[in-house]
Image 1 (cartoon, helix red, strand yellow):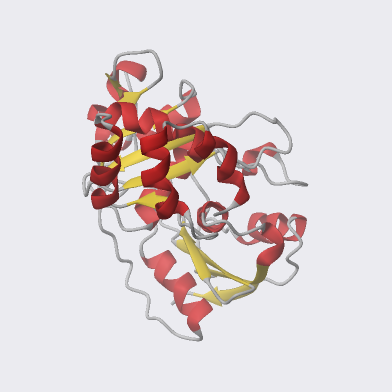
Image 2: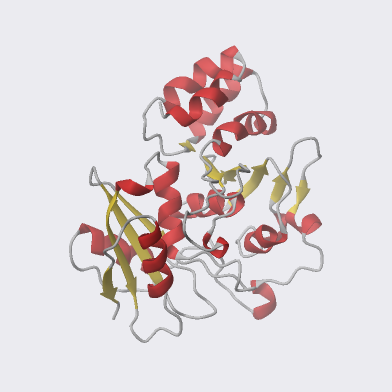
Length: 294
């Protein structure tokens, strides 16, 4: 078990603790609970779905990287498949605050990059900020997405984001978490192919500048992230952050990164190159392989 979970696990009820411990025993537990695991935890603990999600929030928050704020936020995205995806806020040393990942973005992009098709609800231990509310409005679940907060009745995103502006106002037909494929042919080694595949599924209806990043860690595992744009632009999530998010949630450290690749078009209306290279340098990774999409 990764040491970050030990304190949070010890605070749970005996039945839930006993049922959960084997599920998170791997040091690289991917921070996902399958539908079957969720059902088993409900049966073992006697908790309903909402109460179980609240009980597990401290484990999600334990994944946070908050060297600047020292304020850990945890989130759990509940997919229509029945799987639950942990998320936590992440700050990267030596970079600007604009490069951070909010907990809701973490959980949502986690679900998306794992192949989840849509979300039913998101459970968070603090009220979502405006940035995150706008990010959630890009989802194909729309304003009907349920937001669960401790001590409050569930509300929809529409309640938290009245008079919302989003992709539907711009006549965007394909929404975040819908299936997308930009059709670039895979080539190169496994890292390059992962970056291209990530670019293929990126959500870029505004700039039409697909991009993907793949990171390889010391044991050979590859994590990839896809660019996720937003109608309000600023809440967009760069592809590097998507990959870093999966890497961290799976229990790896920044210093485990051995190689990095960015796939994007050379004639793209916007480029991820400079921001990606700068953030990786701050994390101790100097080499960035660039793959031109055709």
